[in-house]
Length: 221
Image 1 (tube, helix red, strand yellow):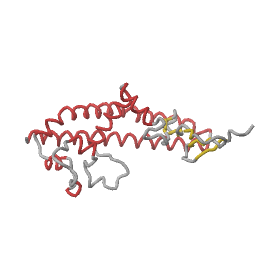
Image 2: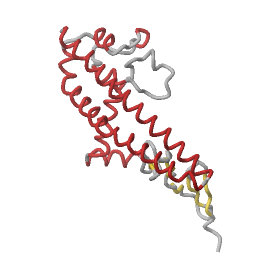
Image 3: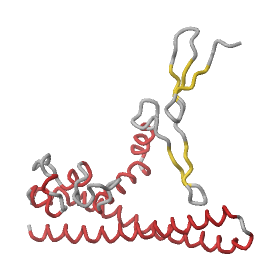
Image 4: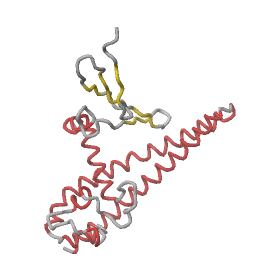
């Protein structure tokens, strides 16, 4: 029992170091790209060399994230492999203590909630520290998130699920998507228009990217 708890503690520390390094590299890359955008906006000829240098630094920081993401994904699969053993040999209280779940946040949990459920389903890892956070960023949550993204992006089943979420009738039908451009900026891709049938002689409406109805008069010559 003690060995298992110690393993999970050390494991969390290791994952936390990986996520901290990723965050630092992301911040460095964003800072360099922000400087590049400002230099390009003022469009002075003697800034060209500085722009090239900053773009190279941003690329270097981004590429340094790749092995760390791989490590994070490997950690998540390892955690899934050992989660059953950890759950069967620990109590809910022990799991909550190791995962730093605030006592006030444990009311809806039961003994059936294992490591995966507490971390990813309920998002309660480091719950007090992340109470006002805009998104979940606890270390094991990020590891599980990386595994989930790997499933969505690199398996046929996952790609089908991902695509269906943005199709008509899907959960994210009206949510725009974003793609990273060559310069590192995010380009907004609006959701598809969805036609709404109308009665005879009435204009057909479509739901636009901003959620407003766009009317098309089909009765006009």
